Image (tube, rainbow, N blue to C red; front, side):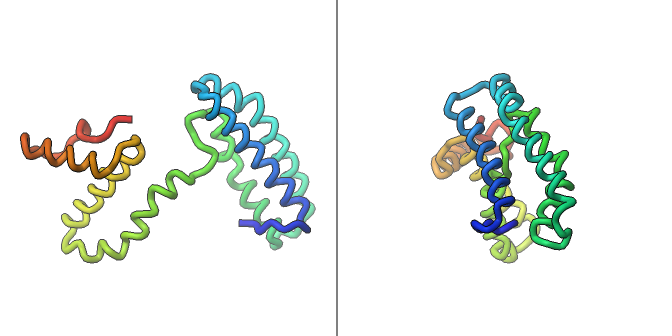
Length: 169
C-alpha cells in the first residue's frame, strides 16, 4: 500500500479519484437503487472516472522509476486492471473486499485454537459452526438466537444439517 503524504500530489490525486468512486456507491446505496439502476449509474458516473485513472496510470507508469513506491504501485495496478473493471458491469459487486476480509477474520484469529480440535472431525465441526454464525450475521439475524432455534428444532426432529436450515437472505 502506498503511503500518502502531502508532498505526493500524484498519490493524492489518485486517492481523490477513488473517493469519488466510493461517493457514487454511497449515492447508489442511499437511493436504494435496483441492479439495473445501479448498473446505469456505474456506467454513467464511475466508468469515466475509471477511464481517467487508466489514462493517468498509463502516463505515470513510464515517468516513474519502476522500483520506487509509486512505480511498484502503478505496476501492481496495471497488472490488476482487468479485474478492477469487473465491478463496472456487475452492480452486485462491492468496490473492495472489506466484507470478505471481515468475514474471514474469525478464522485467522481462531487458527491456533483449531490445533486443539482433537481430530479432523472436530475441526470440521468447528468450521461448520463458524459458517453458521457467519451466515446468520450476513442475513441480519442474531447468531445466538439463530443457533438456539436451530438446536431446538433438532430436539424435535434430529437430523443432519441441510441447506434449508441456513438463514435465508
